[in-house]
Length: 74
Image 1: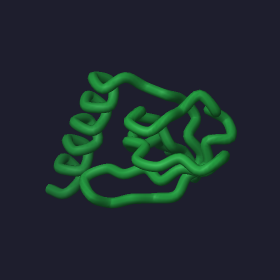
Image 2 (image 1 turned 135 degrees about the vertical axis):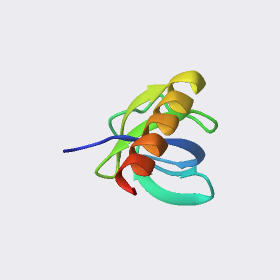
Image 3 (image 1 turned 90 degrees about the vertical axis):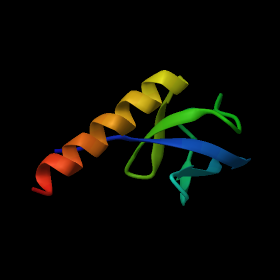
């Protein structure tokens, strides 16, 4: 199963960005989403931002992933 993870963009340099979630940062490509800017939430799959999302959708997705992790940890 493939899952896109929501990350918040904290730095943009050309077609690349640094994005983070809960203190963990990752360099990602924003070549597919050139409209992305600092402060935006994006869905990231295989190192590429594939879609910009709003804050509420990002929070819902993070909650879902946390619940999924907890369910699989039992």
